[in-house]
Every structure is written in C-alpha cells, then in structure tokens.
Length: 173
Image (cartoon, rainbow, N blue to C red; front, side):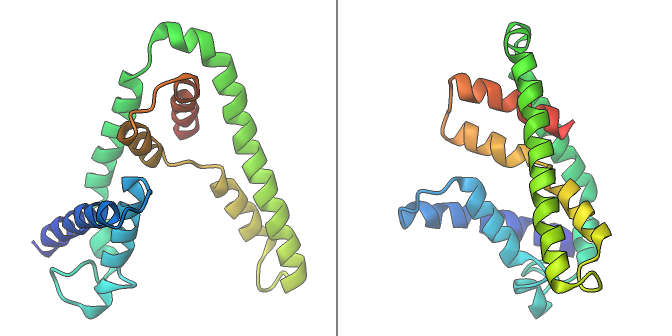
C-alpha cells in the first residue's frame, strides 16, 4: 500500500512541478518538471526522511514498480508506432536508419574516448577500462518517453519531427 501512495505522491509532485514551471514562466518542457519531481521523491531527497507517503525511501520500493514501468514503456512504444505511416517510412526509412546508427556510434565513441582519457588521468584503479566501455555503450541509448512528451506538448509537426520519431523508435528497438 505504501508504494501505491508513494506513486500517487510522485505523480502529484510531477503535476505540481509542471504547474510551478508555468507559473514561474520557465520555458522548459513538462518532462523536465517530472524528472525533477522524480529526483525529489527518490531515496536521495525526500525518501531519506522515511515517511511512507513522502516518497520512496528504498530502491526496493522503486524496483517493485517495474511492472508499471514496463506497461508504461509499452504504451509509449505503441504511441510511437501508431504515428507511423507506411508511406512515410518508405520515404524516410533509409535516412532514419543512417542517422540512428550514426548517432549511436558517435555517442559511444565520444563517451568512450572521454572516459578513457579520464581513466588515464585518474588511473585505471579509480576508473577501470571496463567501466569506460560500458558507460560508452549506455550513452548511445535515448529516452523515447521524453522525446514523445516534448513532441506532443509542443504539437510539433514537420520534417524534423517526421524523421525524429523513427530514429527514436529504431534506437529504442
């Protein structure tokens, strides 16, 4: 029951953060407010107070919500897929694949190079080569939820958006 109340509180905090951003005339997407609210209710901020309804005090409580996360990601993938038209995919498919592969490889190479350079400065005992390569591989991942939220919030339409969604879907796949 406490994880359900914690989830409700997290959603409430996210909604209030979006309203506060609008009130203060911050020109940020709503997803930014939700991310900040998630940080606030997590184990490193409000969760430290160990109040059952005031966030998540343990990572186990967050892990218990993984089925909800999986369902939400399924809805996001379905939403992205529902916006595709076969004619658009035929038209921009090759471009999306090339850009998707290029951005993933470029992100991996740049992060690997930066971390390996940092590892040589700090010493491999503080930042091992295996950790550098793993973090480089993780760097190529994008968040389809955040991208889709921003596109929907601003009702973006056009050639860049038409190209962006297949790239995000390809990267997520």
